Image (cartoon, rainbow, N blue to C red; front, side, top):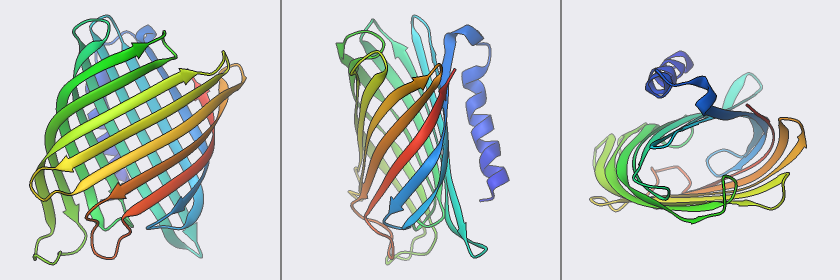
Length: 243
């Protein structure tokens, strides 16, 4: 899939979130930095990310778009695009139902693309204001992945129902520093392929809306495509601009 097609998919997917919403209810951050990867690619490259959040009394919408790219000797060595969109309907201050979709295109993962759609229940089990909270969620859904090559069973697609478990902890260390931990695992209910992700991040305000971020991400695929690593890591140092 070309970069232009990927951008088009992201734009079309994001449109429902923005339609008819008051701009004052939105907040977001743009991120640009250096990324060091291990696993399917062992590279140092540039990463970019855009995060958007819209929240009112009964609804919360979250969107994230990211890309990593690098070249060496006129040859592409890293090319990865990810987008996730989530809508929460809040029953009360802490409980909510969620609907989530995700798309990933990683040229060196063994997949042509990976997609999931899940829905379920979440609870903000600990809440100390906007900056410090713990969210836990559980849901079910469907995974559709397109393999780059035919696997041992002669198939080039992975299709199965999945269960999803996720957690997010935000903890305000001070007025200018924030610790963040995200965990998720998606369990295949047919082929038993388990994809787990962890992101640990520390953000510190520099001046005004500008912050620095140090993050470490790990992804583990229990049944990775042939020729691909099961575990991939990303270490990043970035500048964030909040708006």
